[in-house]
Amino acid sequence: MSYAEVIGDPIAHSKSPLIHGFWLKALGIDAEYRATRVEADGLGAYFAERAADPAWRGCNITLPHKVAALDHVADPGGVRQSIGATNTVARGADGLFATNADAAGFYAPLAEHDLAGAPVAVIGAGGAARAVLFALAKMGVGPVTLLNRTPLKGAALLAHFGLKGQVLPLTAPLPPAALLVNASSLGMTGQPPLALDLTPLPDDAIVYDLVYVPLETALLQAAEARGLEAIDGLDMLIGQAALAFELFFGAAPPREHDEDVRALLGA
Image (cartoon, rainbow, N blue to C red; front, side):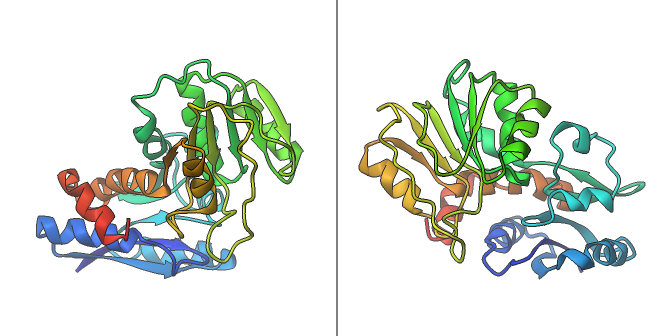
């Protein structure tokens, strides 16, 4: 039986098997989707083993492997040069190749908002943040304030994506941003909390938290308490999963059942 999977460390929290499993069942595809813990020092061996397994169709990639995975598979689309991180590896005619569905997944719930020239604040500078910044650059947003533990890394990312803005420590007050994105693991179950004062945000600001465990994070609770538009991590998760599913299994997922998927995930 053919199969795909999601890899990371940790991985038990992942909801990807529920999403892909729902779609496989709905379409009657005889395949599986698994969650597999892969430690950093085992990443090369993992891809070597999967490349030799004809039943393996590909994998989604989560923390902490989104950058390191690019060292072990082909990159025909230039993901390393553009986004600098991958969240999806699939099997092609010439072997395993990397792509990134995070950027499109992130953008989907923002498509109806005109954020051209608008100030944005982003928390984090890891693999997910790279996809977010790539999408924001394509959207033509205004100055970007990146809040991160290591300012030099943040400054390099802004420069890489051609974004004007500033880098601040995590403890700095938020700027009056039209969009606030948490692209870090802060606030995730098992991770340090993310405590932010949302007072500087305007009343029409959007707060977008990529964390989905828990689904209603403290950040989103604070946003809703202020009456701000809140976007949870399932929007991006389902969006990027749909692109990966088609690569893995050769069929478009039944997106008309998105509300059923959200219900399955406890949304």
